[in-house]
Length: 287
Image (cartoon, rainbow, N blue to C red; front, side, top):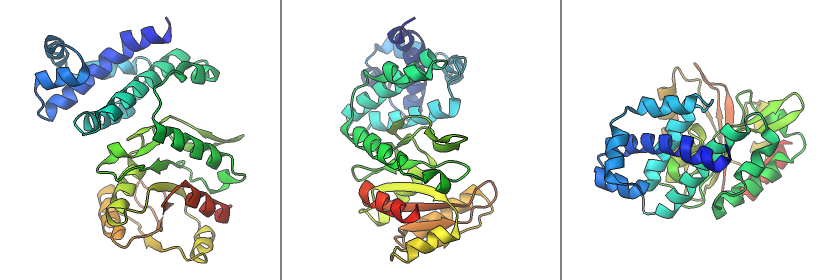
């Protein structure tokens, strides 16, 4: 079975099924859903006749992560009803191809690039990939990565939701031999860090890039010596308390948030910059 067959026979029908449910839950008519998904209205009715769990379970059979699929389908729904429908087309094509590549190449990771080389190109994602490559090549980067891994997020245009922010569906993580990137960059690819950047941008539109590294007082001291605005937060008793604190802190327009973590949260430092070059300058200070 070639990758195009996997996309058309396995991935696309189930992604359409999940998207149909997400869009229907948002109050869209079957007629509009059919137009968005480029299918007939009777097919929309057929997709909705089965529960969303049916489509999720179909993908889980192929080791596709349920949480990533549901999150990305919510992001696709955001894009579908936005004014930038072209971005929905490109992102949905990319996500379908990405899932197909996982199924086709899960035992042959060296073929992943061959599987996805035909993706439609989004210029902002290409900028992101180039910057990520530069960051990954920095000597000593593994020393500052937190145990949970890092993510890199990018808002190329003023964001109104997480759907406007590019991030990895996985993480930048340490291994025994160095560091690796898991997942792929997509709009809405990151949840935690993208949501945090969205809060920051609302109060400071100049910020476009976010990155997280490990909680280390000596690292933060280096940044303070370079006149970056550092804010300390935590510890938090729960996740809702974390987000309430971050909403308050965002109004102080920080460059760096040093968070002490809390229940279920690893201590982490977040940095927000106007572009990738400023982030790279900060990494040079840290490394």
